[in-house]
Length: 331
Image 1 (cartoon, rainbow, N blue to C red):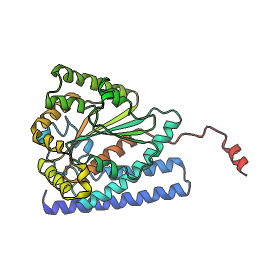
Image 2 (image 1 turned 135 degrees about the vertical axis):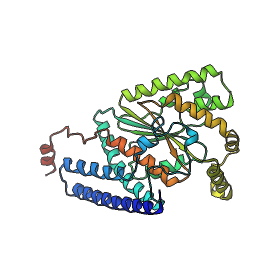
Image 3 (image 1 turned 60 degrees about the vertical axis):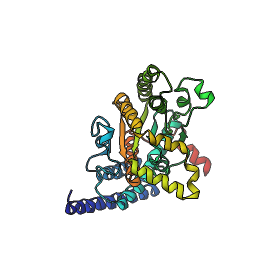
Image 4 (image 1 turned 90 degrees about the vertical axis):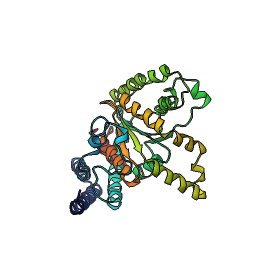
């Protein structure tokens, strides 16, 4: 894309973001003035559609494994496919998208209180320093903590290791109306033995079918799944590690084992490629998101999360009591 076309695209994105902000303000006014629920839902959908329109090709297609991406090796961590603007526009996008996510999450949680089974599982994977924690802090910064469950999976404890590999995963799944965010997941129980040879090959390879079946059952039971792999380049990871070493307040984030994994970079890339080949399905596809530019990966995850919630067709549950009687008792 030429500089002239880039500037034109950036101007168009800025204009769209301004319009989305105005529509979002109209929604806030509608809420304060107690406009009809239908009007509020329409404004919420309009805001979301405007935000989606800034992408030249939507991440749900451009970054989906098997569609816009077929090989992990082809994904450049420094790229920003589909979003032809700067970090400044990206941050503005995230701010507006986060507000929309917060509203949809309120609806999801409210529906769950009256028996709706709809819920959402977000799986974040990636090499060390790929930005998984930052995704959680930035994309979910405006949501209500009630209804959000975060869990980071490390090396299995003795208790966890004594059970089936999905046992610890099932304990952290979202309740009805909730969103669960996994920082690493059951996929570690395939990748780690693949890379380090700590398990009979037939055992960990047999887990692919278990995982496919497990995720399909979740989706069939109205649990949507978003699977994200953050693609950081080896050079970007090196810079992140050096920043941690240079900053005493970040030493706690660093572990020598991170360097051991880095030494096996190609082994990890091969293992993850097999994961995508074996477990990216229609029900639960993988999205391979370039992550050298933090603002971009956060914008992508925010977009995928918001459109997934919007696609659930959420509504506010009707009152299950006599409204007039309640008003009468309040005077």
